[in-house]
Image 1 (cartoon, rainbow, N blue to C red):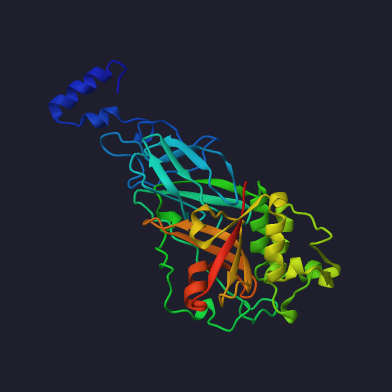
Image 2 (image 1 turned 90 degrees about the horizontal axis):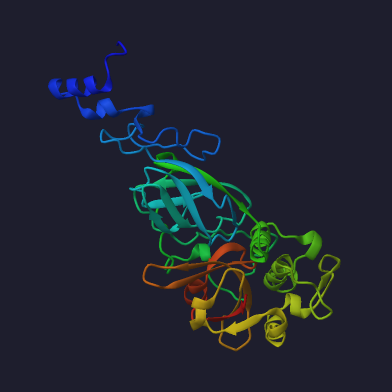
Amino acid sequence: MSSSFTRRSLLSLAGVAGIGLAVAACSRGGDGGGDVGSGPTSAASGRASGGSGSAAGTATPAASSLEPAQVPLAGGVTVTIAGTGFGAVRGVTVGGVAARDVQASATKVTFTAPHQAMYTAGAADVALFTTAIEPSPSANRSSDGNGSAANDGQAGATQDDVTATPTPTAAPVPDASTAVATSSLTYAALTDVDRQLEYAMAHWEDYNTAEYGTMNPIGGDCANYVSQTLIARGWQQRSDWYNRDGGAQHSATWTYCPSMDPWLSANASTFGLTRRSLDERSKVKVGDIVFYDWNANQSPDHVTIVSEVFTEPDGTVRIKSASHNQDGPYRDLDEMITVQHPGGTAWFHTFDA
């Protein structure tokens, strides 16, 4: 084609020969947006059907940047992805966990980062989908761990044995390979709560016996475990709350629920705690402490640490906990007090900040 054959000539020819004007306008891969996503700052690649946008010049979904690149293990922060072709995005997953509050425009997607599935630091894939993805509560696992066959202070069904369960079945999450675009972020232990839950998840099954021993032989390890997570949160051992010599020496306030509960109340102002009833669950946060009374005798039989607070579409607040006796990372509070221990109750010690 000679240099005299100008763009104007091509457009005229298109009008005569019926060649689509979109052909004359195509350039740089047909995405209408140049090299977005291909430079050194790109965090993703588009996966739209056809790979080059529509005939009308619609940009292929592609991410160019993500902020913040690092988020807390507990999530809860707003993440923004900049790029092109995002107008149809309706759902986001991070490390395979559905994100909430997804909002999209042609050039930006925002969402609230979910907590890391097991509160473990590291990279996580961010996947964008054109269908909405409903978040679901985390599924529990269970283990007898280091001899915790005792069932949280009372004989009863284990959570794995429960058939009539209030916990909804988790909806399947689409595979990241089917996403229209992907990016990535990094989870890190940035806060005291992050460090507390990082420890809780590292040791819900793998007991830290070298440092703290196990109290299962003398009635149960639940309070010992919760106390350990509070140390990971930043608390310091005291003369009235301690575990020394690998568990050989320990205070009742550290290892025994009926002593630990009133001790927390007595020192609430020091630790920044508020005691709350079961109907105040909307004020509960990850890292808070839950006590359980299985037989309504006003004395706690079990204690756990909150690992997830999940709000159902109807507004119901679901509390999940990590614990020893039984050993599990996401035990459901309502199952524990209605199915496992009918007639049981619970209360909370929540952190004020």
